[in-house]
Amino acid sequence: MTDHDTAIATLRDMAEEAGIHRVHMLAWRDLADVEAGGSELHASIVARLWAEAGLEVTIRTSYAQGHPPEGRRDGYRVIRRAGRYLVFPRSVVAELAGRHGPRDALVEIWNGMPFFTPLWCAGPRVVFVHHVHGAMWSMVLPPRLAACGEAIESTIAPPLYRRSNVVTLSESSRRELVDRLGFRPDRVRVVPPGIDRRYSPGRRKSDVPLVVAVGRLMPVKRFDLLIDAVGSVRERVPDARLVIVGEGAERERLDELVRERDAGGWVALKGRVSDDELVTLYRRAWVLASASAAEGWGMTITEAAACATPAVVTDIAGHRDAVLDGVSGLLAPGPEQLAERIAQVLCDDELRSKLAAGAKDHARRYSWEATALGTFEALAEDAHRRRLRHR
Image (tube, rainbow, N blue to C red; front, side, top):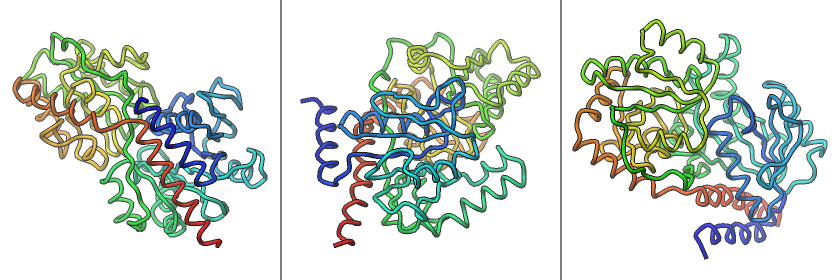
């Protein structure tokens, strides 16, 4: 029996013991959304593995452009209704009215704005919080909406969730939830994301120093700072190249920035690429870079690590767990240090080789089967607690 088969069998036994057979997941966006990112991928893979174990899983999200309101994916049901803001009240009303069908447990994915499940969900539930948004609000919303979002996340919602089982991706994100939002330490569990098996080392790196960055083109990712950082790197490494993978609202601004910097010869904005193309880029890259201001983990970091590519990233919550500083990559306190550390890795063959080996070893720790099991354990624990309380 493979590790995958063992995990699925364990999930099945846990579900039977907890009395959980039908799970509803409430999320802001669906994987099919044009702006889908790591959070949506994470939810989709967990749902797929739970469905493989025999659970009936339904994910309720906002609409996704060009996709029907309802459908099935990888063994689970997807309901896509309402827009970016109305998805929150309409999902709650639909659950209260039973429109999504019966459920034994509920997973709330708190992506900045919560669904306030403690106020209306009586059964077993777990809350998934990837990271604290904090300064992100002002990067993506007008001032008044940003202030409202930050107040809800930091002041209004946390007291309601103090007795909830919470799952987050990293120990540094857990500390933020406890220290900044006041969550109970004994109720916050760390379950890192997995790595797909297709990510593995290649035969050779790019002939020229290649820096790769992957993510949604949104303000919080700060790809503009990364472009400037690699521009500085080129003063020491003239043939360095930067490839950025992803689409998003910042695409036009980044295109303009590349033109202003006359950087078209060394910056490539690839947009969306196929899975095979992404694996090839990870394998050929000399370093994976990120200037992001906030992350729950940084899944692209560990994906690249599995391809024996080290990372140089900003020193923020999430990144501190996805990268072992000095072992699988380097952490940078700010943009200037980001450029300095990228240049350091590109110029030092011995350091780069050491970090590549460390990255590959670090990536071996993570699997999606462990992620699905860890998340379900938190849900089953809440089911058992409620059963004992009822008795």
